[in-house]
Amino acid sequence: MDRFLVRGLLGDSEILVGESLDNLARYLPEKNVFLLTDENVDRLYGSRLPDFPRMVMPVGEGSKTLDTAREIYARLVELAADRSWFLAGVGGGVVCDVAGFAASTFVRGIRFGFVATTLLAQVDASVGGKNGVNFSGYKNLVGTFNQPSFVICDPKVLLTLPEAERTSGLAEVVKHAAIADFSLFRFLEENAASARGLEPGAIRRMVLDSVRIKSAVVSADEREAGERKKLNFGHTLGHALEKVTGKSHGEAVSAGMAAAAGLSVRLGLLSQEDADRLTNLLSALGLPLSLPADPVAVADALVRDKKRTGDSLDFVLLSGLGKAVVRPVPLSGLLAEL
Ligand SMILES: NC(=O)c1ccc[n+]([C@@H]2O[C@H](COP(=O)([O-])OP(=O)(O)OC[C@H]3O[C@@H](n4cnc5c(N)ncnc54)[C@H](O)[C@@H]3O)[C@@H](O)[C@H]2O)c1
Ligand SMILES: [Zn+2]
Image (cartoon, rainbow, N blue to C red; front, top):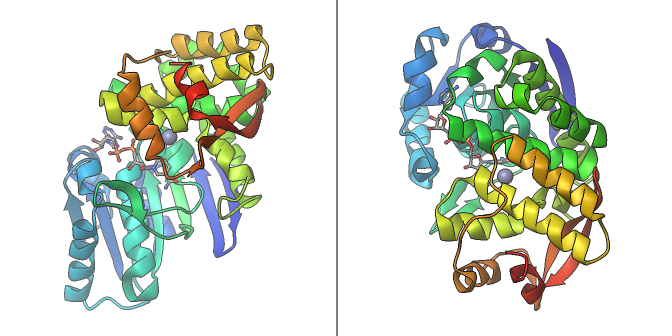
């Protein structure tokens, strides 16, 4: 097992890469623990969880709501929980986001930790201290910044992930490599089949490097002033494409990264050869390079993007493989890449 310490403004977080779900109890207090999981994870792994009061939420983004948080508060009140309680979220990014939010707000904050059971949660959602719920059609509109005490990343639980959930996580790993780590990029090029097959060695490298890259970016910039924007690589267009096409987050981000690389070439920042290496890697990992979408609808979704300033958008471009820069780009320039 590898332990990685993430230092946050509000406390440290220990990421346990290679630890088993079966050892969760070792990281929890002996009593006063509440568990949150979702229906899929409970069906697959519920019998291996320690014996504490448990809430099983419905699966998916639709349950990332204040209503779910309210239900958690209500259960905690029933249990007469106070500040000494601990909330453990066992699941993907949805469970982790809701668990972190409910724990951070109940009695102004109780301690919490995660078992991250999707590749996306292991490489992205569990690091950085953001949590929250969707509200009134807006993603993550209500939330806090707060670090979990620990995150267990068990590689074995990823083997039950459906294909679509694997590719979502892989897209974020490529993003980390493209913006910050050429050596991880080369590793992915050379080991695309093992990465796609989620083989243990490949998972370990992808999770460890992603955690290291994301936590370095985040600790340089805890409240998203500059550096952290780089983590939006592929996401500005990606979010718009996700909304318009209804495709998965990973597929949309992949198409967003391919378009951003194209634009970087057009602006003279990136060589065509490097852009081709990125698109070849995405294809080798089973990710799409474009998604058919109505440009008017995409433009509309982009304009609604909360990161917009004036007529242009702050956009993450590549100035090399492993190097990102943030530049304002006019909307028309973006749409030309689709
Ligand atoms: N807080 C952050 O910094 C951050 C970063 C990125 C994403 N997110 C959030 O994460 C969420 C997406 O996370 P996600 O992709 O993990 O989605 P998810 O939590 O919905 O999980 C995806 C699906 O996989 C199932 N699942 C989970 N673990 C499984 C396993 N081991 N085997 C089989 N099935 C399993 C889930 O039940 C669900 O159906 C979004 O809401 C996004 O906003 C947060
Ligand atoms: Zn993402």
